Amino acid sequence: MQQAAGSDELRVGLIGFGYASRTFHAPLITTTPGLRLVAVSSRDAARVHAALGAGVAVLPTSAALIDRGGLDLIVIASPNDSHHLLARAALQAGRHVLVDKPFTLDAAQARELCALARERGRLLSVFHNRRWDGDFMTVRELLRAGVLGRLRHAALHFDRFRPTVRERWREGGGPGSGLWLDLGPHLLDQALQLFGTPLALQADIATLRDGGCADDWFHAQLRYADGLRVHLHASMLAALPAPRFTLHGTRGSYAKTGLDTQEDALKAGRRPDPAAPAAWGRDPQDGRLVTGDTDALQTEAWPTQRGDYPAFYAALREALLGRGPNPVPGEQAAEVMEWLDLGRRSAAERRELS
Image (cartoon, rainbow, N blue to C red):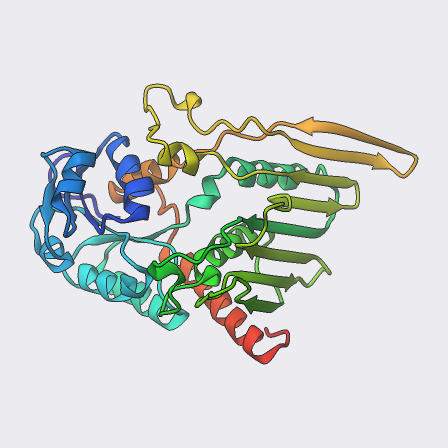
């Protein structure tokens, strides 16, 4: 990747100042050495300045931000249905681009952006931050170490209890809304990273809440060539959530309850400190590991690794400076979009598809 002109400090522009920007992107950009958030597009300058200070320029439109000179990276954290058009405009303007998940609305849009980035010689990345959840990293190491033997079944859940439908675009039923496009990208990306590409997928996607306009529940099965079955599940009506990860192998099982702590910490206003990285992302909930044979099973607490969202932006900085790989290449996110598309078709046709 071509190094940005000037010094090693990279100037970042952020499109949108909704939940994703306020909770994830702005805090992580402003605490990553070598990155400087210089401009935000928002219709509410007062809210931006209250959060980030008067030194950050606020532009009224995304077009004005894309056209602003001196930006090395544009981060797109606007509503899902705008990702494709904004990323295309930014790439055509010669910018490096980071897009919040979901990458686009479908795989065709994703592939178009990947081709455009290659044509223009620009970095295109997607914020699949859940690769840096502590529980995901713990599971990855368990699998690498072979602790569970040959894995036969895995279940990845993302359950919440939000029975009241809120008036917001994510739940409004329009393009880009619904739980399959909100949490499906996280679970599919984690499954692809942990287990590889499946043979086939069968999905059931539904709206279960009273007054719901968009899907708020899904269950998907990934079938693998070696017989492995991976279940992906999310619900907005789970007051008793299932474990976040459950793994069953020929030598034992592992389960981890509770969500990664980083999102709640960021929502509460806590920030990672580059001078004390080990203080960030701690999860007090151990997983449970059961191993042994039928007559002598042993149960032990299995510590959860420290989550590390700051590592994503640090890796992105290094990629932009030509010193490391893109942490989430657009092509990987496009593969996630292909499986999301297939899941929607599977649910509509009520059958397994490959």
